[in-house]
Image (cartoon, rainbow, N blue to C red; front, side, top):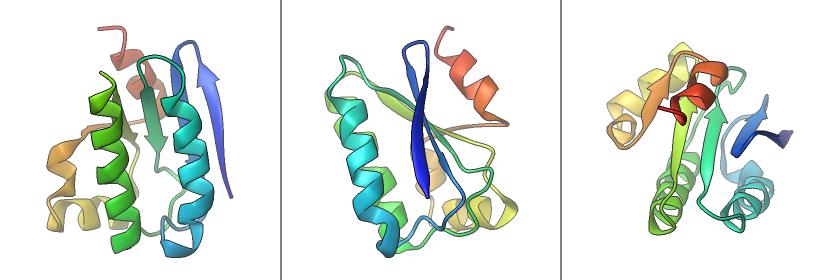
Length: 111
């Protein structure tokens, strides 16, 4: 299950399910909610995400573009070793700032 929380003006998406085709509809709803509030600032916390499949990668890229169109950005936090490998091998990682943890990612918006 995924959830959205806020720290100041930053939305944090977190969960413990795979970022896969089955979970895309719920994630799209959460991310759409982030897009309606001014300049979207989103941290996607991957600390407990066990796997990202091709649908999950496409979701990340699509919403990174949607955020950029509105002057915002998605940052990734704390990817597991497997998720980091998937992001690296597919070169999706080059499209995101990846930070050590969600606190660092939230703080990076104030710099």
